[in-house]
Image 1 (cartoon, rainbow, N blue to C red):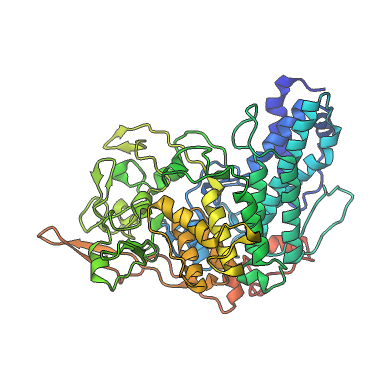
Image 2: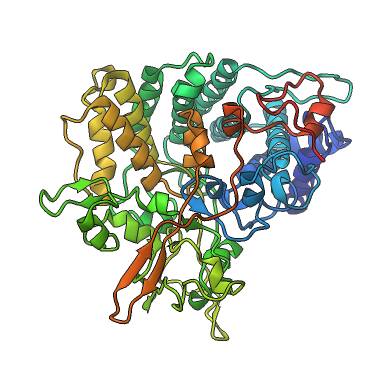
Length: 589
């Protein structure tokens, strides 16, 4: 039996072998059976193996990294492929995907779509295999006390939750996928076909239910923060069900109703464990706060990601990799100067245009999420105009990367000085915790599902918790007016969709929301920036007519806007895999 001192080298080594041992997506058993037996005959080693499963939770900041998601940094978000966010570097993975480069790179390419298309598929199945190994072998670990048995139940619950997480990551990109519940051995010749969407969602829900039944509502004081809980599993179940109930999948046999989704979200609300943070910015700056259902555990460090989207005069590399488009900026409501109610921003309204950057009139989340012309950040006025410190200087200059007229600050701590300014290192270590699911999202899921089930003033299961109440909780925290009870079902649905875009911006939600809503083709529309020119009297003229970003690929088959193609290497390995609609004739160069 291995001693405790061997854990630090044995488990990571074994885990790496188990997760990357074979190019086959089913990952047949490696030649490490002896080590595996040793691990699961020792409770402490079993614990460490299970903890290492959390390494498979990769943040949105790591969606396009080198290798099989083994790096801790990247410089692209999936959000950069939606219509509300834009990267700047033309060698970014998202640029390639936006312009149609889905199948022209193999899984071993060192950049481009290999990261999000080919390697995401591989990594998810490698992670599922590592989880299946634990679920098949945990029973061999010696449990001497009741405390050991309780702890093991919790670890098993967490494993079911993690498997559900990875299957959902696959389903929301590819639709129905092969379902593998056991460790495929060398003697097996199993090449399963894709399961239908109903079977896949049912499987995810089943794993979530198993996990929730075994996990505690809150993390024990003896455990490290960031471990999954009952609420995480229940929240993931709600997300999977609202996915299945949404227009695209409900018309393709998901078998999930809006009532099912609303009930699942209501169950999370009724836990009375999660609460909205009083301040929107604190959601992202205070770790493991009351709003987070689950996130990637992180630690303070010099994040390459932050440098990539931070202007040079604020200490970054000035690549401006996460920039709002004008289409997104227009989503923020503005306070009506007569009624005092917040209304949709209208660029044809002279009063709205005169106050578009007035932080006392726009939805407060606008000022809390981005910098713009005239905004103040770390005591510096941001000049998004020709000749300013952020605006439209010589083509090819670093400032030219900030070309939409805006820059996200949502994840920045204004009190942390990062990078180097004028040759002086500021040595700040920001903490970026990637949140997979938070309570505001649960409230908006419930609002969407219950409105579809019965209208804005209806409640699930006679609970008295209405769809209107749920969305107004989010709006009240933001500091904007409640929606009225007289709002129609259709108008309410439009408000929910807009609220999700604003509240959850650059959390990689809209890119997938438009797919489940069946409107993925909005991602192909032309996007715009704002160009400011400063007059001699200090006033500004704004031009909103110029388009921005790479030429977006237009597809003849609308399903191509919804579903990823399966990488050609996977189809060659498993002839039973069928390609997604519209992608059958795509051949990689």
